[in-house]
Image 1 (cartoon, one colour):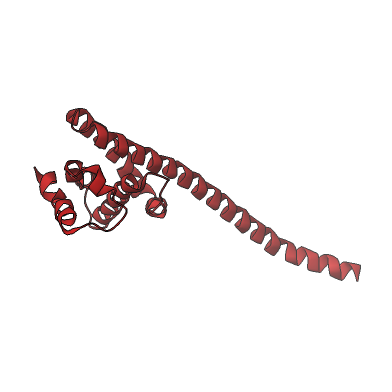
Image 2 (image 1 turned 90 degrees about the vertical axis):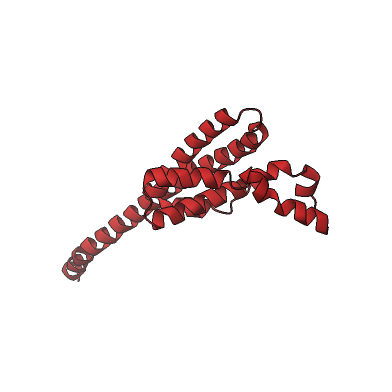
Length: 170
């Protein structure tokens, strides 16, 4: 019996070794994925905070704000080419008080993902990203009390809010 169990054990060992190796490869792959997700999540939060500051400073320092936005877009374009699944995971992530600014980043990520799918090059993606970051720029002309109103907007407020795209064009 001892010889038979030793032979059975030796026959099973290569299969077990292979299974353990596969398990360890999967663990390492998941660990790397989590690290990329954490890094990308930090970038998402930084970008949301940037947009909050940018919208506050845009009128006073438009050139500086646009230059900073171009850096943010450059930081966003590369991961979409390298790891689009991580970026998609972050869409709809919201931090307290960052809803509107997270929305801008979500729109930018989704726009860039669509641009990548359509085969845009990095320069075109960069331009698309800048446009997406500032797609609601006209809301700067809308009073805060209309933008932040918790109840339903009346007809005049709705019309005013709908004008944000025309204000953005100007």
